[in-house]
Image 1 (tube, rainbow, N blue to C red):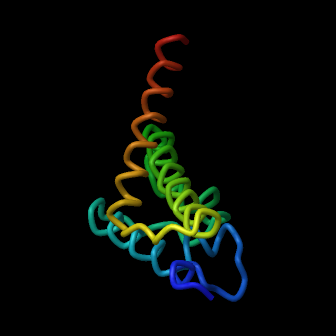
Image 2 (tube, rainbow, N blue to C red; image 1 turned 120 degrees about the horizontal axis):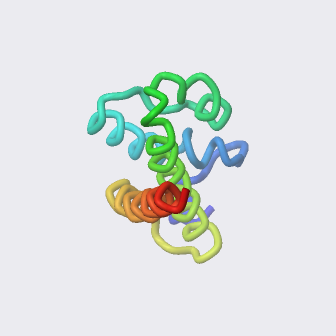
Length: 116
């Protein structure tokens, strides 16, 4: 196995593995957990199930946009390594990529509310 793929070297490659279980994902979720003071979701099923209900109803959409942006950033980073054979991003680069995606999502939600 080539060195760049070591980050995502796992026995079973699933979206859950890439977004929650690999060491890069764990580093990203640890940073998010420390920064915002909540336990990160442990799986896709957990994210859309009981985990989201821990937040007040008015914040759930915003939390979901942020978490979706982080998941997307992790997935894109995985794709860069696997398909483009690029070097793995640091967890800070992934967080920045997720932050950018989160801004786009919040902007979309704001426009949607204004149009309603």
